[in-house]
Image (cartoon, rainbow over all chains, first blue to last red; front, top):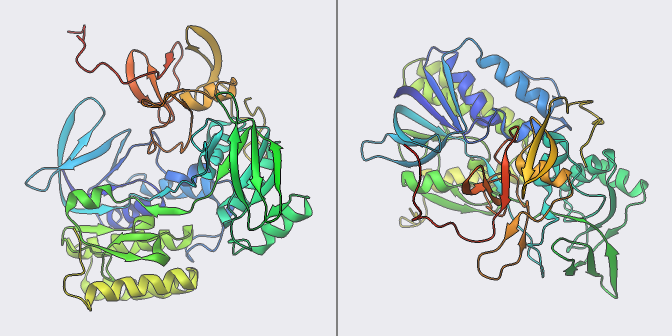
Length: 359
Length: 107
């Protein structure tokens, strides 16, 4: 199979890259291992803001719908329930439908593989009933299944606060939010005060000491600064933060740089979102963990850069559009993340150490 | 427990299907993953770990952690969080590593 642009990952970044490329007449193939496009947007019922100026604030699943609408009628072929498993010597991607593997030869590849949630380890953390906040959100909003009746949440990011509220809305009793630091890590204080108003205790400088249960979690011990308390719960949601998914970049032999603000090891890329391989571009959380608005912008920039490389758009026009989108990125993205991104770009384009790259 | 009426999305569970876990029938709905459908029926233990034989269940629901491996319609080590239920599906817990060198009786 041949295609102009192969996009790996059909989430918000991959879809916005698809819109930019396919709307300029390029032939696009999107591969995603899920059974529907939209990625994690599909279970996000919260209103996303700020989004790029072309979108008004809307709920996650509505945004997924809006993005998918825009590729209809264009030359975009989604390969759902498919995975990239490797690359052939000629640069073709090896894609499997779980039965056969076939090569897809693309002129350019955009990798928008997204992010993975990190675990928080404590004794017996692998017991059923203990899951990531993302898993709990998927259960309630995509599968329409109660994740549990009585829950605690370990960690206090914006994502954790949002999930706590969504769990309460479907009838789960959130008994505590446990944070090892001395304050919440969420930036949006509104949700934190709403949870407090609902009487949910925040335990700071605290952690789970032990979990007990017969085949599934039934009881936990929480170590507070000056005592240990026991709670009966059947759900523990852990919020360990997220990191870019890098498998495909390893296979492609891309170079990496470490950037704490972007989520750890991140493939290196320039301001066109081109990696150190000239045929490989990057977008979305894979290029640094961020929020939905900025993720869309990275996909748009990558899409425009690929369109330019394939002569679907003039360089002058591409430069102008990129400049505008980078400005918007600077406005929408959390300052810390944006400055990490700028540092990451600088480390790539003007390296201080020549041998700093690993691959 | 199934969420019959979602606070934002309303009634979404419209097409019931029957799945079999350890040969017992359970009700699920067409869009649910196998792991989610079992959890709705109170089944959280989907298998055991290979070395210490500890209980394992749904952990990431993204197909990355492989904590939810199950045997589905005769195939071992299938990620139950990434597999959508089908009517009549036969599901067994993952109790050990699959026998990869067994004879396959097809074709």
